[in-house]
Structures are given as C-alpha cells and as structure tokens.
Length: 201
Image (cartoon, rainbow, N blue to C red; front, top):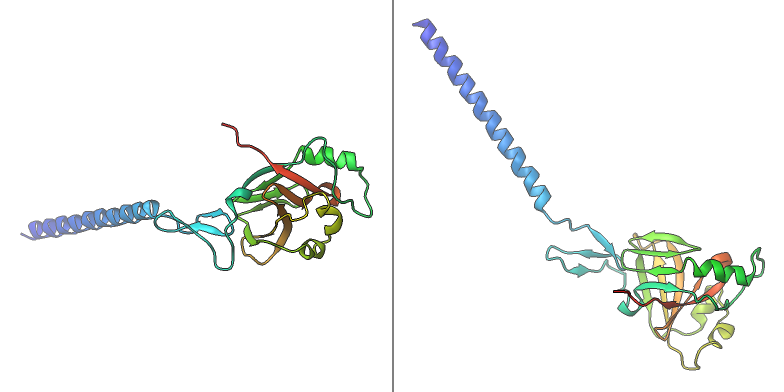
C-alpha cells in the first residue's frame, strides 16, 4: 500500500513539474513574440530628430524643425566652380580645394548630414530659419557682401543649423540660396556653393 501511495505522490510531483515547465516556456515564448512584434517607437530616422510613431507616421522632436524637402539630397560642387571665400591661412590652393570638394560634396538628409569638414552627423537635429538676413551669414564668419554678390539682389536665404541628436551640440551651419545653392564651409575652411544632384532612376 505504501508503494502505491509513494508512486502516486511521485507521479503527481512529476506532472506538476512538467506543467510548470510547459507554462514557463509558453510565457517566455509569448513575451519574446510580443517584443519582436512591438514597433520600436525610438527608431530615429533623422530629419530634425524625427521619429516614427505607433502608426508609422513621422513625428518631430520638440524644438526641432522639419528639413524642407527641397533641401534633402546630395549636393555637389561643380568641377569648374570657384570658392566663394578663402580662409586667411591655408595650406591648400583654391583649385585643389575645389577638386577635393568636387569628390566629396554634401549630404543633407533625414538620417544623416555629411561634409568634408564636419564629417558625418547621424540622426541630426535641424533648426531651420526661412527668409534670413545676411547678418546670419556674417555671424558664422561668411562675408555676406562678397558671397551674395554672386547671386541675384533679392535672393531668398534659408539658414539650416545642424545639431547632434540631442539638439544641444551645434556641428555646422549652412545656407540655402533660392532653393538652388547650398553655401557651406568645406575643404580647408573654404566656402563653397553646391547644387543639388538630380536623382537617377
């Protein structure tokens, strides 16, 4: 009789253990599935600190601005162009600076910003000021009188400040003239005017 009771207790304990293991495994699988199917609301896709919300729509981080769509893309300096402004002390000629800049260009995009001087800024935070006055160019060391002489008298200036993802560290400041030219510091601290490359395909 004792053997029968002992066997029943053993079987009961074994069944309880198997059930506990099965329940634990099922809960673990459900948790893992939930994590993989859950959208990552912190997936930063750049554009001025923009992120995806739960519906896949773009949202903008507080304090940042949408990067105008007309500005987004790759910009390049023409092979036969000239610099708009030279630094006081330089170890490189204007011709060599243009040559180097022609091979690098500028990337102004939602997920990253890149120039030869600044390097890459991933998930940048943009501050955009439309209809700017020339004094904003002067404030970053660009001599607006000489630079703006290259463009029409009533040219429209847009300033774009490029910050890191936190929006606290300023990495670069560029200017868009009439939605056609990007004015920026590049190779050797020369100031260049780049034009937007046409999309292929």
